[in-house]
Length: 231
Image 1: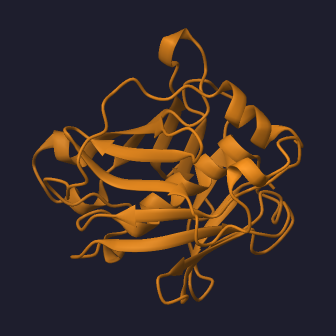
Image 2 (image 1 turned 120 degrees about the vertical axis):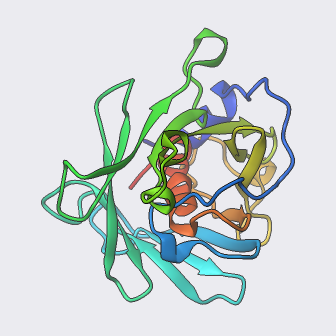
Image 3 (image 1 turned 135 degrees about the vertical axis):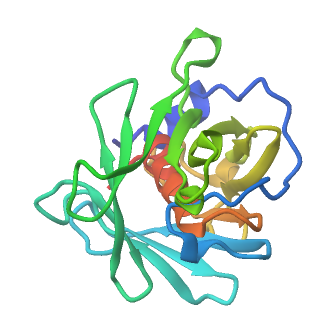
C-alpha cells in the first residue's frame, strides 16, 4: 500500500512504558539454539525484491557478510515467508493470520501445526498502534528444563521514537534487543523523504548475548511488514 510509510508516521502511538536498559536475558531465549551468541551482535535487515521474490530481505552482519535471507510472501504456494540461513536452507516459516489475537505464527518448514511462536498486536490507549505487539515463544533453549516459565515465554515489542522508528524487545524487566531505522544503511532520512511514497527502510538490529539472532530477525520482518508495508 503506497501510504503505509506515511500512515506509520501519522497514526502510530509509542509505548507509554519507560525504556529499559539493554541487558542479556536471565536464561537463553531461542527458536534455533545454534543462533544464540555469547556476545552482543549487530545485524542489518535490508528490504528488497517483491512479494514473488526468492529474496525479499537480506540480513547482513557488521562486515557485510550474509547471515539470513527471507523470501517474498507469495514466493511459494504456501503463501508465507521463509526465514532461511545464509546457504538458503529454510529454518522456519512466518505466516500472517487474519486475526487480532494471533496475527502471526512462526512454524517449522512445511508445517502449519508445529508452531514455535505466535504474535498478537497490542492496543495501547484503546486503539491499534503499528509496532506494538506481544510474542509468545516456545523457548527451544529450555525444552529440557523443568520450569514451565522458562519453556513458554512472553516478549513485549514496544515502539518508541518519533523522527526515527525505534523498537524494543522486552523480556520481563530488561530489553534484550532493539531495532531502529538505520542511518548508515538508508539512502534518505525520514524528514527528506516524500511522505506519500512507499519507502521500506533498512533496520539496525542490536542483539544482546543469550538471545537467538533468528528470532530477532523474525521480529524485525514482522515490524517491517506491518509498519512500513510488505512485499
